[in-house]
Image 1 (cartoon, helix red, strand yellow):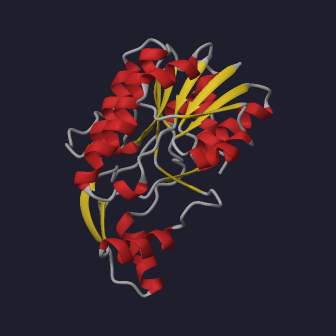
Image 2 (cartoon, rainbow, N blue to C red):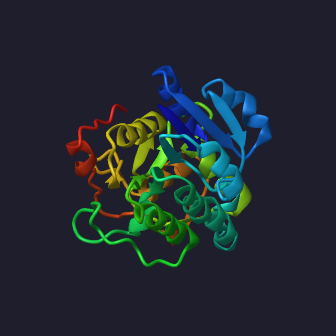
Length: 272
């Protein structure tokens, strides 16, 4: 099989590694020329492009069996509401629309932020998406809509990704928030801090592609509901000797449990 992964960050790289090890041909993309050598270690072919560049995407997806979007807005442009507008529109919405215009089978890596704070006792795939105007949920939802409008479209909604050796751990993130952002972050205090190991995120995407699944799937480790942002980051601040963070509540994620029963019923199991 031949696959294209647009946006090879930690999850995309792990998915490429798994697929090439299984004998598939994988084209990985990056927006950074300096990462080409790194991608060549796990990809059959590498292209430098933005997911919103239709001509460039058209060239790399020819004869592919599936296209997986694991594009991520730049972290440095995600903390400020005004900066998120253009960054999320280009990285998420434009990339998704370009992908579906150039290939009939697209799987999009989305975010549980599309649910906002969530409604009801449990959030599942039938829970309505939020009408929050913030650029993050708005563009994730718009990208999903573009992908789901096609017969071969699938969406995998994931929470915060962790576990890769080069990831910034939570104490380092808190330190960054205090040193560069005055201790103010765009997230909500009451949200449950769900996380997914990057290997499980890659495995979920590979499972959806391999099983030919379409539609929406939550890939959220749901064995135990986690604690809130306020609780977890409050302890980190106290341990590091920092003041408590200020949660601005601009990007809301579920404050009630999230279910991944649909994905598990299809045969997927979380390993981490």
